[in-house]
Amino acid sequence: MQDHKPTKKDWLALAVLAVGLGLIVLDGTIVGVALPIIIEDLGMNLTDAQWVNSLYAVMLAALLLSTGSLADRWGRKRVFLLGIVIFVAGSLLAAGAGSAGALIGSRAVQAIGAALIMPSTLSTVNATFRGTYRAAAFGVWGAVISGAAALGPLAGGALTQWASWNWIFLVNLPIGVLVII
Image (tube, rainbow, N blue to C red; front, side):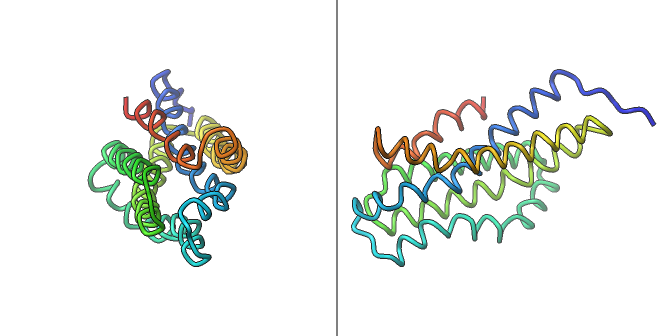
């Protein structure tokens, strides 16, 4: 069986999916470095700080199967775009949070968006690419996860040092808008 050669549109779609995926993975690791400054600024206790840091990953993992099923029923593209919109809205809420409760709630909103994005990217890559091209596409998908996870702490440190902790969330807005476009 011969591999179906992907079109330029397929590779562009992979790039858009990769940016969306990178956005949610980055957000999973960017908060850790900024957390001491957030704790001080919002007067959070240790329990609140643990919720801010962990809730995102726990909710994302808990929702993956059900959101993957939604993508099968409603369509991968629709669910991906809905996830980006929800994630960006959660990022905007997080950037403007003035209390621990508001930040924790906005992290939950981000996690719902992220849970809609991740399975949509995976299944779209699987449906779009075949054979050796699929292996290359999944290589890109995996590299984005690794790279974004490594970049998060660096970006978090840079943004909190040269701007404010709010920017670890605000940076998601223009990237999210570009992904939607």
